Length: 135
Image 1 (tube, helix red, strand yellow):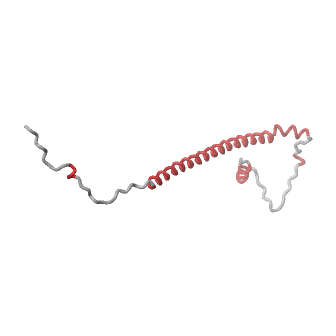
Image 2: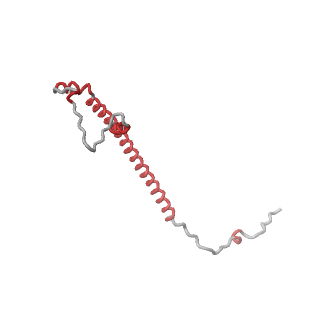
Image 3: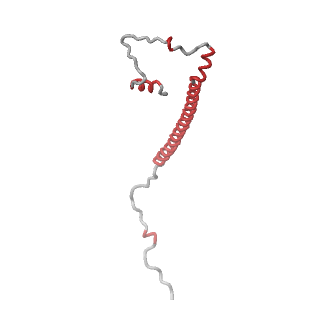
C-alpha cells in the first residue's frame, strides 16, 4: 500500500497580499505630554501641601504667642491690683503725712448746671460698671 499525496493547494498559494493603509507607528508625544502633566500635578500637590503645613506651623506659633501674652496680661493685672490695694497705699500715705480729713473741714461746692449724682441713683451703677470693666 502506498500513500497518496494530500489533496489541496499548497500553503503558499493560499497566502495573498491585501493592499491597505500603511502601518503608522504611534507617536510618543501624546504619552510624553500626559506623563509631563502628571508629574507637574504631582509636584504641584506637594508644593501646595508644604505651603499648608507651613501655614499651620505659623498659626500654631501665633496661638502659643497669644497664650503667652494672655498669661502676661493676667500677671500685669494682678500686679496692678496689688499696687492699688489700700493695704499697701495706707502705710505709704501715712509716711508722707497724709491723713483723713476732719468732717468739719469738708466743704461742699455747688455749681450751676452741674448735676449731682447720688450713689443710690441708677445712673451711678451704670457708670460704675463701665468704669470698673476690664479690657
